[in-house]
Image (cartoon, rainbow, N blue to C red; front, side, top):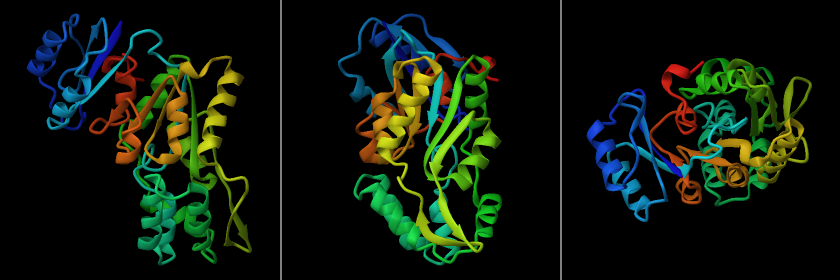
Length: 290
């Protein structure tokens, strides 16, 4: 048995009953269940439809995300989340670089690294090098004035934890930001890279080894083992090429507003919904959100 989920942006509740019912009838599905009117609905099917991706493309034009996944084990026990452009809207290193006067140059490197066009670790070292001499105090200013949260993040973390889940923030960014973001959103733990500081100034170097793609996979495996669960019990979310390892290893790997090259390698793609989509995918109704 599989579950078909149709989800759109809660800020623009465009999901129409006729859309859901027409697809349900075409695919011979069970009764449609509305998790939130206008935003999210689901129904069961006995097998994965052969034209899934054709329908997915058609629904994208209507700003509706379509996901087909096994019904068994949908509710996960561990949330493993990327930070930059996932739990927050920004890329922290781009914001720091803008303060250092090299914003456009660094943002271009970031985009290429996140799209898999450049080695992540080499790109991180290069970008951090351009921050040399920036006052450490700029970190607090950037966090306070430039960082905004992705909609639905607090509900996602709180609801999973209220249902016995664990939440870990695992980022290729910096601990100076993940600690703050994790505390604000209620994560149980966080992992990231550490910027070196001397005399109140950034040195232009980062602690080794760098937390990149393979380290995110190790985090998934280590935290799962510590909790006594398997990777099948994990829902992971990210947007960049360095997230692909953990997205592929998790029971449910969600490409959230991801780079095209990343989304193309993932079966669960959320391009229109916000972070609450991860709750709808697990079968939570809006009335069950914490």
